[in-house]
Image (cartoon, rainbow, N blue to C red):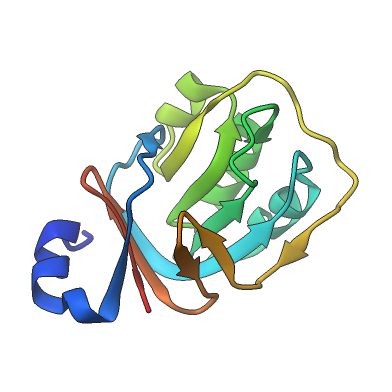
Length: 155
């Protein structure tokens, strides 16, 4: 079980950044945490799909989709693959699809919203690079905590 973000911030606030961006809880688990892995992509989820098909070892994938809601970066099949490979959660600065199916999975998923439109599959983007979302930098290997109150990440 993950530590409540409010309690964790009270104890370690100076060592943490708090994401002020309001994300929707869309997965079957609201609270999750783990080491950060990242993908930066825009309307192309090929790298997301490929990474989530590798062992997650309890990691959280932070996807910087630039805040675009024009197409989904994660759907039910990709999310199910993440569960099969041991990922703790996914944080999407963008959209997902298949909300009801994803809500039934034992996976933390936070995103800006949803859109049924598929994304491109060209493999354009970057993996495991620092990404900045709403002024907060997510660096691969640092720890991230998420729950109903929000998202915290180690500085």
